[in-house]
Image (cartoon, rainbow over all chains, first blue to last red; front, side, top):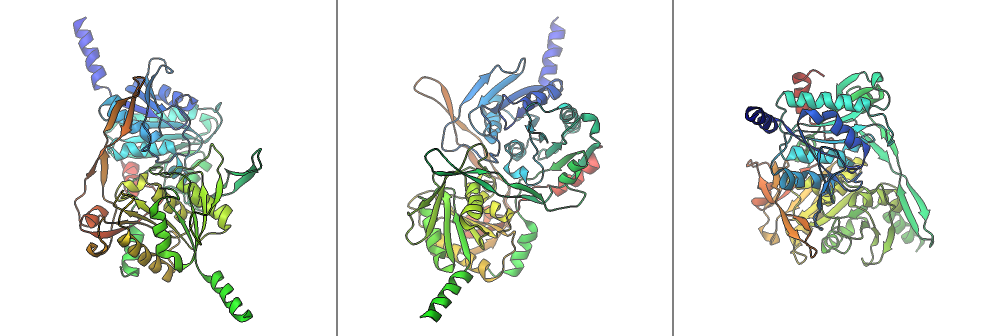
Length: 267
Length: 267
């Protein structure tokens, strides 16, 4: 018995720690599917926002204190809610929940796409980027389906496959993947493409309304414009029913323009 | 009289439109100094947050409506407040205030540094980045002094110089500059350096406190760690009393890791 116990303890100690977060909040179906997909690959710890945080980008909470609450919403999985943003979740998880860096950080599965320029607005991806800033390999997963009743079978399958690959080789500590999964049945997905971020943007169109007292207010709407037609982009891959994988960086220096402005201007 | 009137009208029409925003809110001294610095270089339109939005990164407001309010806080300058984030300000300014793209978008002057990794958390810089996504050349200015009574003379001088340069040549439509100005007297500033973003990060340390009912809460603190000692970084430039200029991009693809994972993994 003692020997068995010891070996179990050792297993528990040597298994990777998988931190899971998202931006749709701990109650979203997507994060449960992600937990299910990778549950047996390591020790799972969930630290997720206590309310929806879509579009929060890389926001952090600096003017207000944060709350961290144990949650029993996920059977058999250590879970916490945080009152802040997805990036706050990662910071608090490392500093106050795990008291160490996890072996990998997963974010999602987001309800809706985070390809092309969406990566910059996405709380899901910003959590993953924050992890990579902290030398934690990370992946953000997004399914191109906003419905709460969406079919997550394909997303789960590819999430597991990608996490298994990252854990099997020691992933680069700054490796941060933006993974988008096409909408629809799993069997229709053709495979995986490593891509670059498509050059795309939104043509903004705020909807103007009046409140009951006659005062104007605006809702953000906007039309998505893909401005890049080449085959090596995430938008192309998704349109052709591939899972897109874009490695993401946090060095925002534009080296090309750096050279250009050194040459073109006298400072 | 008619001829003079016509020529004046023409001047007004041909002068560049300069959109100004920030993340410290319309009441912050920094945005007033920025307006003062460039007031005669074009038609100034201010659209700034109605409350502090520091650390908001590239957050956008998607779950709530936005308000836009005419403000009379700045004498002789068209000014609006927006209830959202700095990025919302830029989007609303283009779509609902200007009804066109401005010739340049300026953000700041931020009370506090936005060098190195801070660029990713900064609402000031995210507003500038949003402009560049929309093909508007942009600059975010930050002074390395958090005090509301800080000496902005150096910041104003260099802000004006940089905006003049950008307006005199037709700047690349995606040119987005992250400009940080050292703290202290203007005469001590040695000049300008075009730099790359230093590889730096924060070692998080949340301060744990208890509220009056005994429940825990956390304040984000954290120690800044510069992990790069080379002379071509913004941190180096600022430490040596130069104004740092980093051209910033929104293509987050990590092309180096893209090649590496295409080679290292079978997908």
